[in-house]
Image 1 (cartoon, rainbow, N blue to C red):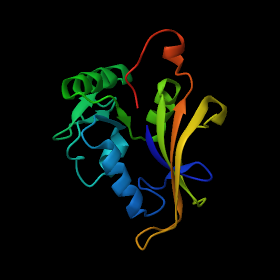
Image 2 (cartoon, helix red, strand yellow):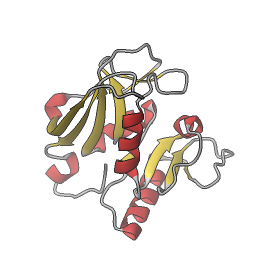
Image 3 (cartoon, rainbow, N blue to C red):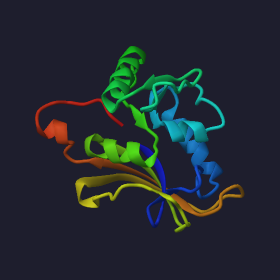
Length: 177
């Protein structure tokens, strides 16, 4: 999973991010490049274009929705299956879930890693990340950053890993990000 989240759990407002963080956009591109990305239809529609260099998988219940240069999936299972095939074909070990709120909520129980940008602000929002039980997650890295010239707020890049991952604890490995 990849998410930028305010101190209040905010991830979106009016179909967009509630901040501008150019540094986070560069980080997002770096960690998702070459990997399949799964997103909801509204997240896809909020993007200026398909994310290049990545298989874009759009989850939607609307069977009439078509997005050029993206793969449509009509269930989480279908989206994950397509992402796994792509990851195996290209030799990558992560599937990147990039939002929105409903997709994060559905995928959080099976995620094993979260690339979290903690935005050091609490903006007004209408879209939220699900409650994250920090007791289930181990922080493996943290980089604090002051706001740069094109960043609205200071922020931290944090990588969290579930320890142990629910399916690994049950004896089954899982390809997931």
